[in-house]
Length: 141
Image 1 (cartoon, one colour):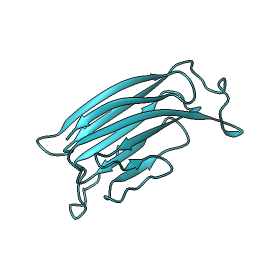
Image 2: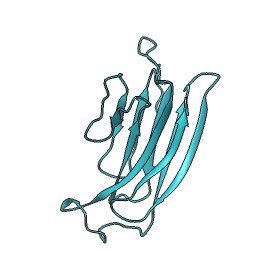
Image 3: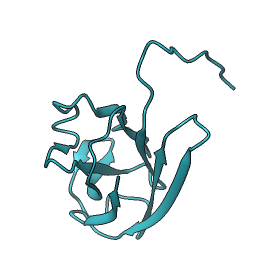
Image 4: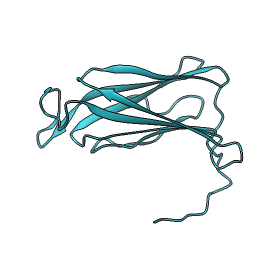
């Protein structure tokens, strides 16, 4: 168990999105689209508005964590993508190179974290084949 004192000089996240999945040989990516059309994902981890990925684990079952201290008003879109697999040879797109026929990914959204108004929402999503891209949540802030 780890305890730490929050650095109050840093802005606290008003919006956080976290993903994990249940197959250590699969790679699942979170894609976040802001109301203004900015797109955060593994190849574009930080956005011009200051939001972005705090963590984007690529060796195991996550996590991927996206945060925004000042989320823009409007509709946010959260997608999950079964990107590929990982084994002793590295990343691959071999459909048989995973542990499970159906990968269960979990997306948790946290709003106003560590405040009396904190709200959490968790969605469990089945992913069946490489290339699956699923809109999991459309959230109006």
